[in-house]
Length: 174
Image (cartoon, rainbow, N blue to C red; front, side, top):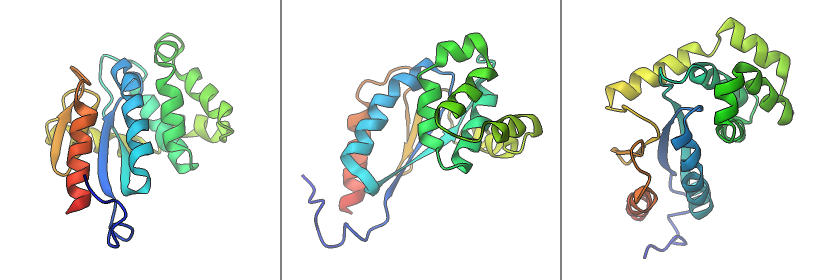
């Protein structure tokens, strides 16, 4: 067991967990439980970073990734991503209006969202995430990267949270 209250742990840089995600992906929605549990366990010691990996099979995933970037710019990145993931079926059925509905529900500037989706101001970020994901071997979502290790959750989430905790504990102890 690691001692999270050692003198150096408070000043140490947080461990980074990249979550390669697609906001129309039912598996990513299922993975939210693990992300929330990790956030609760580690707090500020684990920096959970949303990375975009829209899949071609999901028609609205690329727009959803752009919308999530706009939400992040407005200070609500993760809450927005979680709210969209809770509505994957509705997003598949209704498309981009769902993205604006979620923004409205979170009190974000919906007009700015609409403009961002039209002018494509976040396309380069989404494209860069997708290219980097492909370069490191991401092929499905969710995929996690922590401590240089890639963990594929696209086929099964079973055991992944325990593996992430094991790696995080080791990195935080070191």
